[in-house]
Amino acid sequence: MKEQGRKTIAQNRKARHDYSVLDTYEAGVALMGTEVKSLRLGRASLVDSFATIDDGEVWLRGLHIPEYTQGSWTNHEPRRNRKLLLHRDEIERLIGKTREGGLTLVPLSLYFRDGKVKLELALARGKRDYDKRQDLAKRDADREISRAYGRAAKGRVREMR
Image 1: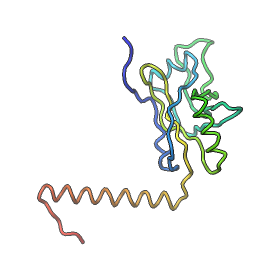
Image 2: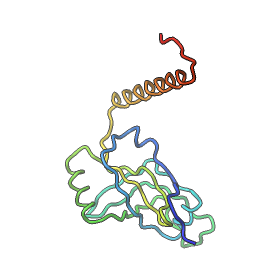
Image 3: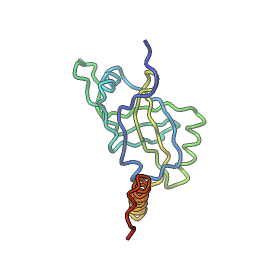
Image 4: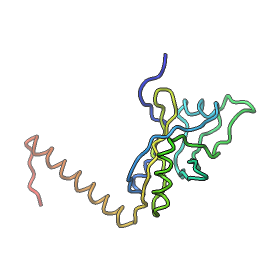
């Protein structure tokens, strides 16, 4: 029986905090057999990983997939560079955007879609410290507003100070 749907393996939670995501792409990942077996066990880390474009090909660097415990001498290198599989027009668009300046390729999540390993890749711009503080303040304000609405809906209205 073939797998259906999406099963998340790893997420890069810090990416959305450190970068403003402008566009996202879904890319396949060229992997070895032992890497896929290790991923099926849910073992991977996207921390410190990034993508680069070299000679018209997109490469994922810094993705850590631990060695498969039952693997033999055919086991993989945990932090090797892995090729990302994208359509030619998507690669051309990414080359143009990254040359534009200030934009980087950041992996957001790694997952299985219909039995195949996919990577959600973001075209992003790095945030400054004050942007991060503004985002945190906005999130806190939104949370407080939703709490106030929740209290009002339950009939427990408290005076706003």
